[in-house]
Image (cartoon, rainbow, N blue to C red; front, side, top):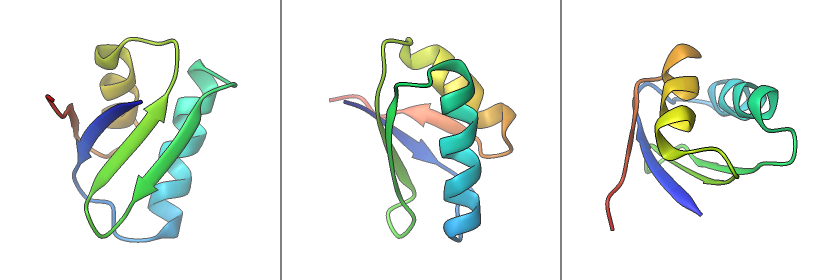
Length: 67
C-alpha cells in the first residue's frame, strides 16, 4: 500500500471525499484514511504522484510518505 500525509482531514466527511476522489481514477482502489494521524493508505495500480495529485485536487494537500 502507498501511504500519504494529508492536510486538512478533520472528519468522516473529509475522509469520504478522499475515498470518492480516488475511486474516480481507480474504482478498484482500497483506501484507508486515518483522521487522527492525517494519513491515507491506498492500494492502487495508479502511481503515487497521480494519487497525491488526486487527493490534493479534492482539497486536501497530500504528499507520499517515504519508507
